[in-house]
Length: 573
Image (cartoon, rainbow, N blue to C red; front, top):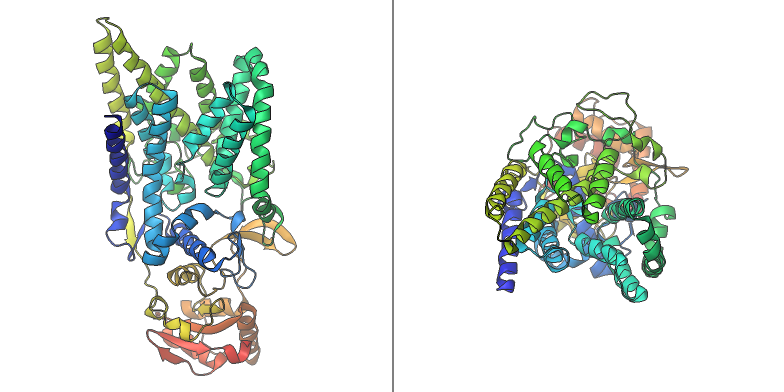
């Protein structure tokens, strides 16, 4: 009976995940899912490169196949090495677009089922409570919002097991064995999403401090064993992750911090009681001005959920776990507001606690709104505890038990239903030329050398590269890197080469296609810089002007399938 229930719960979560991603599945290769097409394009490229790293035994943490020839530090971006490796067969057989949809769908279902499993086996005695907790943690607005192009954020299927092993720090057992298990889980999560691992660590730190304040003697009593467990775990993680950590913080193309003012990526206080764009009770304008963008709607629980959670905390305030969780929810929610407490879109001058953390290493690279991801998990756990305690009333024969259970179930449904998700939107892709998708390019570009798409555009490079499973290099790209070789402050992308700027201007119709001797000389220097074998011009509104420009630079182009092609190997070989 238990296994049948598990299977039904898993199937329900999977159906819910397909409900959210359904519009993308209608045309895997022809549609982009969600509101952040560039983020999806980048993650598809990452999945394609992971498959190449597996099949060609290349460095999974650094590559020159994007932003040729300088390359991209993948550890300084989203990473996702393990999901990419696991999905390699899917990527090789069906392409990066299929792998992306599989990942974004299974992230939701897997996270929900993982929470259900851990809750039902270790934290609560009620399967209904475990289902509720899993449902909230997997399908809350934060998870749906980040399904708009952020699979490294929604890949939380290991988080419940990490949380459980951290809870076990307060219990008896062999510190070394517990530390090795915890360390192995941390090491695996490191290669799934380092950002989520960091948020788990922050949430655990908040819980430890809350426990210390609420139960100082008990905290000090278990501290030696817990520290030994953590030391063992830390040693294992350092052994496994030393090289990728070096790559992230000191390797080629590493960066420091996140571009722009951190307070751009904050939530407004009103966002906690409003509804998200993709919630049943939300809409196109429901979150306007309350979050940085549609992807960062990490709160948006609505008044009913907050009232229900507040009632749970009051009713179960005698339980230490409830008080600790309440503190963590409050602290993480306040930190997500950034440096000022602002109710609506207009920024106020009221200082918030985050000002004490500004400028700290690692924290300065965070998207501040994502502190609310911690809040989301905590609220899910509190709701699970509420349902579990309600289920416990069955053992009592009091007349009030049944009406109270009915009332609570009704309140739970009324609170959660408006917050549940609607399907994510989808839009058509810009087609990648048949010259690329058919493999025709292989007769003109050596594997690992650069194919330059015209105009030289970040996302065109990304989309062409992922369509070819990153078997050729591309100029520029969509990534975070250093500002310059002498300034490792983080910035988006890289400065375009002079010829790239000229091609963009010709493609926009803002300059004629005439080419001076100096510009031709620069074009030759730039294709050498890119280590290019060919330059390709697909169908374009200013195709004639762009062709004239490139003909003047490299000689007459030839028509190959659906592109004009210039063999630049005589200039770069």
